[in-house]
Length: 359
Image (cartoon, rainbow, N blue to C red; front, side, top):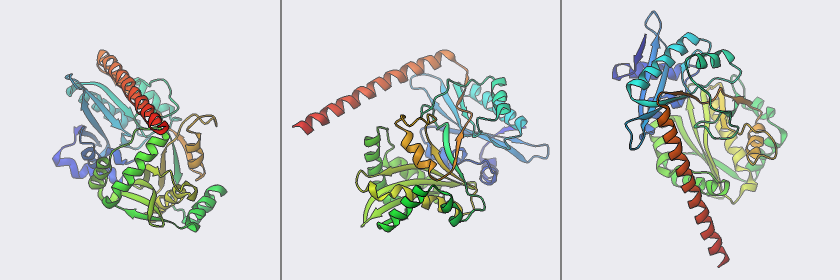
C-alpha cells in the first residue's frame, strides 16, 4: 500500500501533513521548492479503506562527479508515532526508492524522542545505524531542542511560567522602547546583514539574503520575519515558521550594538504569541547543545532558551542506511578536505583583519 506522491496526489498529501499533529514544515512540498538544489520526492501509505495513514518526504542531491546521490528524510515520517507498522512500511519504501535513484546513503532523523526504545529497535531491525552520539551541532538537524507546550494556555499563564529573569528581560525591552514588527521581503536585507554580524561574532556560517527570500516566497503566510527596532534602527531579528499546529524559531540574529536592550527576549515572546493566537499546541525553540556543562561555549544558548521553561528534548538521532560504503568513505574524505580549506581561509581572513587593525 506504499505509493509515490505525484501530481494526482499532491493535494491529498498536502492536506494530510498540514492536518496531522506530527506534520512538519520540512516535509512539505513548499520546503522542497525552497531547497532548489535538491530533488524532492515523497511516498505515502494507505490503510485498507484507501485513506492516507502516513507519509515520508525525502530530498535527493547528487554527488559531484559521481553517478550517486544522497537521500535525506528530514523529521519524517508523518504518522502516528505509536503505529510502528506504518513507520516500517514507509522506511522500507524509502529504502526501495533510494535503490531506484542510485543513492549511496539514506539518512533519516525522525521527530521521535530518544526514550522511544521501540522505535529505535525498529530502525536497527531495518538496517539503520546511528553514528556515535554528538552533543553539539554536528548532525544536519539539531538532536537537542527546547519545546514549549502552548496548548490551551493563555499569554498571561505562559508569561508567568517563565523564569523571573526572562520575564524581567522581556519587560525591560518594552520599557526601553524596543519595538517588534512583523515583516516580509522588505526586511530581508537588514535581517541578512545582522545575521552576517551574528555569524562573524559567534563563528558560524550563515545563509545569504536570497535564501531567506526563498523561504518567505515558498512558505507564504506560514513564514514571518520578526524585526526588533530601537529608535527606528533594526537591532535584532528572527525568522519563524508556522505549520500543522506548531511554530518554529528557525533563525535568529542580533546586532553587536544595543544587546543590553534585550531584544532577543522580546522577539521570542512575540513568536510565542503567534503560536498562542493561532491555536497551536507547540512552540519549538530549535537547537541547543546536549552538553549542559557551564564550561561549554554553547551553554549561554541553553540558558537563554531554558528561561522560557520549555522541555529539553532529545531526539533519537540521525540514522544512516548505507547502500554504497565506499562512496560514503570517499564523500567523507572530500568533506574533511573541504573543511580544512575553509578553516585555512578563515584563519587567513582573520590574520588580514588583525594586520589591518594594527596598522
